[in-house]
Length: 280
Image (cartoon, rainbow, N blue to C red):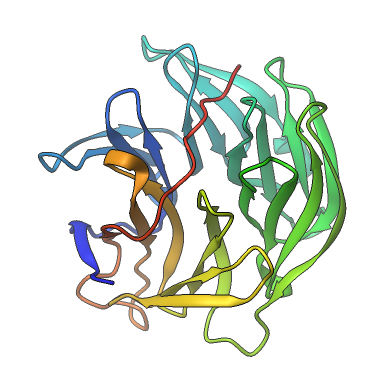
């Protein structure tokens, strides 16, 4: 499959490519620079929103605006630009990281553990209440669901594996975590992931310069290589949701390739699931 540069950038740490079908744009964040970017692939134009703390994920909201997973918690940005806190865990000593929205618009967020605070994976309600499904995580990443909604995939990066949980779409409850794919011994570690319409699980390998697709049964199906070692996350977008967008990071001097920090696209890589905005 051909890899193209969707946006030649020098992002410090690009993450969370998310298609917004409302206006045909790609949302992505430069986490360490506290920025949310919106790219219009049709003409290459884009806009940038800047905040006062790192932003790990940005997702569209059903009523307009965005929901943001930030260092200190979750916030919503209204269409008029007003930023309102929704959930705050700054006093816990953890840091917000990757996020996902299920088929009914529920927001799930994972955290990064602090020196004396274990991380967790949980659901954040529109009112800001947090229901924790997993605790004791270290570096939460890669939150996505199977096409039928009965499986939830999750990455705690230091474990070097993708886990799968049973998911109740009606109740929004996740349970029974177990290994889906072990990546011990693989070049790189698992980071962000997405699921395609056939149930295939695509995962970015940080420090591996690649994205892999695994079948619903956990078998390696294909691997796509990129000219940047720090591949961070992947997501489908474009017309028909057939293009796979992949974000990367730059870290000098070891990972300072010419295209590090760019957003890549693999046209016709597969067929993604229809994005769902946060219902809050």
